[in-house]
Length: 375
Length: 193
Image (tube, rainbow over all chains, first blue to last red; front, side, top):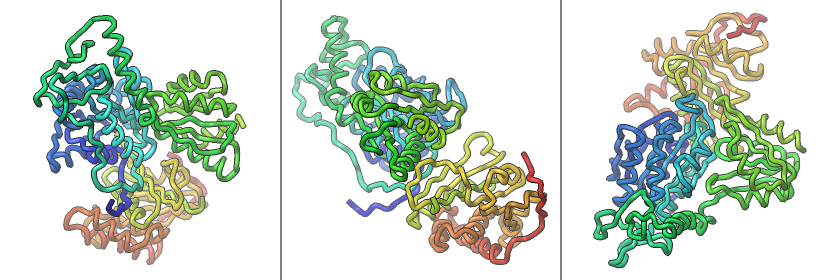
């Protein structure tokens, strides 16, 4: 690998750079603050490398274009923020059902509705999970730095291809807009998806045995693509056993590859009494507190940061809850992921929400104060 | 955190403060320091007040927002009135005397330089006032190696204006060496917004 030089980069730019290095060559979107820089970068870079950038008429069409390009064999990306993310939900559900890979970046801003376009928030955590209807599987990554924005986008693109599963990169305004020193490795970081060269003549795009390779549409194998429940060939079915089996199968994909999907990181005391569970930009404030409390003052404090928020890191929370007395969950919303933490703490630890929803970042002082209360 | 430097660049939209913060941050990266840069977005950045923050540290930087500025630049009166009361007296405060006047609390050591006026009169271009301000800041605080900083300025300047921008940066050093002007008086009253 060539020598890596540190550069100053913005979270949104890193997201675009990651996508390109992971082989994304198609972007369709409708620019919206605070995600616009992703589109800006893709518009500048994709035409230079033989890719396609399209600004569509709205977010619904953007999502549709991404799905079309993806089933045509391209690696795809779209980026938006809250109001646009709402519009993408219907087609996102379609992509999940039809098992068409794609990556959707949502740079969260203060909502509901058009809210405060330039203020950070973490209000779309539940929308990312349940925004589209039905019992669907979803993967959501939540970067806490410019570098994480880069590598989680790469992971999202590659995993999305491997699992034929749409993935959401849930940034927030702070991480999307801040610039930071990062080391970006040179070269492509593209994991090839399973080959579609040797598929049998009896190609089953929705093979019930697992994840069938996706043969680009129009490349020798003709199959049916639908949002309706479908059989192994893609044709609609309402047959109860087949419906149940199909829904189980798309969920099993994520369970089988859990180790590659669920990413968390613990820092701090080995036997903590108080732990913070955080994701996105809030991790930074929490880390500042834990660094001071544990490294400087050896206090029994720890931080579990979640790079993956969905599927929810249930096992990690269960294990943490058995060790600690109190889990503090700082979120820049009125309390969303805290419910899940409470659910998997199973009464083993007291779960305390710490919420801020005025469009400002949670400060280290706020977390420090809450941690101090329970020590 | 004795190594942590927090620089707040404030003024009006259009004075080039956000670009200045990016140039400063990029220079600090070149100088092998850890850096985070943030800026104000939104309506206030489009014609109204503009603010950009840079944090430079040898340690990794967690919380990305400037909370205790060690260097404050005020490029207009509004920002001077707004941010001066928010900083510690130990903060290095640099203001552009072209736009800033009036009284302030004497506990602050405010350094006044005719930043925009010098850019206009000596270099014929008001737009390089931001790079001139960076020269003053770096001369006063020694944040980044001077030559590395000049290189960063050249890289970010629009094609053909690299040398002019470097000249502005050097002029900032000269203004600093010549010393701060005393054209506004200190009083016991801190102006409020």
